[in-house]
Image (cartoon, rainbow, N blue to C red; front, side, top):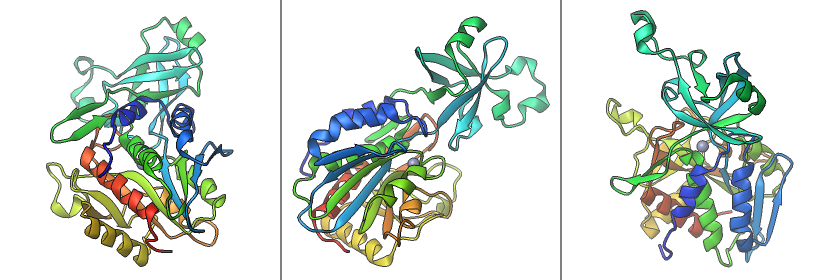
Length: 346
Ligand SMILES: [Zn+2]
């Protein structure tokens, strides 16, 4: 890498609230940060934030990264002022117990504690069952009347957790899925000077609820090919047999051959692998029969767009202690910059 990467931007990105459909805090920050590095910027009707940077050819490269994170939406305030919620995106209820959240209200964020009936008043049979969403509530610590005045059904809540660097170059934070991919795309846009391709850098909305933003964004762009920058679940943890690990944290950028929604075309897949080998970028092949990402929507847009998902291996994905490696992020930035700077294919 020629440039030193400033991870304080990623730290800031992870701390912004932005569940699916409520990404404005993230897009406002990115608009300010990146407008000086782009030729044009616009926001479409769904909220996708789209930057362009002119290239030296007439070919178009679409780069996308989703801004949204999984989270909660309040749907009911009970008579005592406790909040009930639904999940937005896939969250395992077991990871919500005893967590803190920030409820985003019209009068500002309120700290809430997720509670459930305590062990000393539950039966053994109740304790032996996995916790269900219906058993959980958010406690704002406020009188019921004040809660009713300040919280509306439809307000959203984000998981609370600080950004920490730890271990051997690892990061743990909430919302690394996908602020880490957003950070990569932001860095790429900041670094690119006179790219070969006309670059469309698209920060998409509503990926976690069914790749909705990417569907409309891709429709409006004549892309010759696309790279989607996202995280992917890494199961390099105890109790998992080797064939189920899929990708390892710190072992390089994941290059998808196949996931539940996309098969990367062979010419694009080979070109990405060759570039990694030639430039000595750490990579690993990702083959995941479950899970999809924005590439699933983009490759089926119009008459078809050759697409590949590049993935950052992430432990504890969709929790508030997601774990990524800084070196994988750096590898992805390096690879994507190279892809934009030269005619790799198409
Ligand atoms: Zn994601």
